[in-house]
Figure 1 (cartoon, rainbow, N blue to C red):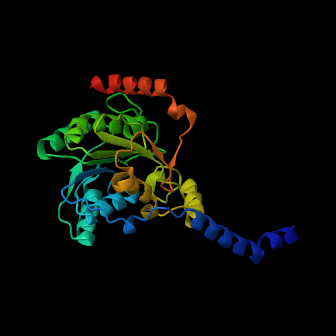
Figure 2: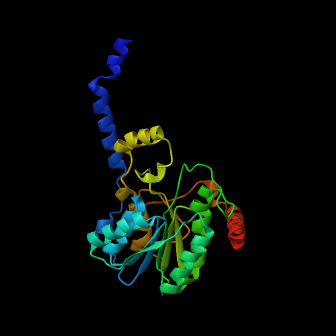
Figure 3: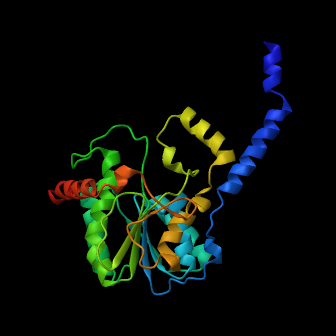
Length: 280
């Protein structure tokens, strides 16, 4: 037994793990570098949901550096304010603002959209980034499962409420990890950021988070690296006019699974979500 333990504690395994981690990290490099992209967003307005932490904060940071008017759509005022101050300080862009929204509440989404439509004359970029995982099963006051409401119905309703403003501001772009509608003059693409070290697992048990963080230290992307594919969809010149596509974590256009390409199912999903949200 001791001989077997000695075998697994051999330095060979530590060296092999380090080499494997290095190889994986090299393969995770994106083919598109946001720092090499000279696109400016001066005069453009962008909304990023879940912008107080993780991928969302780095997306908002990039937009602010490019000169955009950036609206951080966050649920927590305290964490949103901290992100707001950090982004302003790092970029020198004072045209960064916090607006509160709880995507699990359709009333909150409607109130947020109503304020945007009242205050903003244009909207050029909408990034549906906010999402949750591992929440205890809970039903919202609207009667929806909380994760479903936050990850799907909230972004769906928000996108549709802001769609006319985005059409009048075209060319404009919607970038989302969930299903959204796309109309003439507005491009809408879905993006996979990769496996990223963020707070998305904060609702899981300690041991799940511990294992995830341990493995992630060697093999997963940082939030900054995970934000690259979303930024690519939002600002890259080569994606001007490209819509209805799926962008992988390395910023390459790829086909999603067959189920996601089922047009009839997409129509049913849209109509179903429209019925759910129109009742509220």
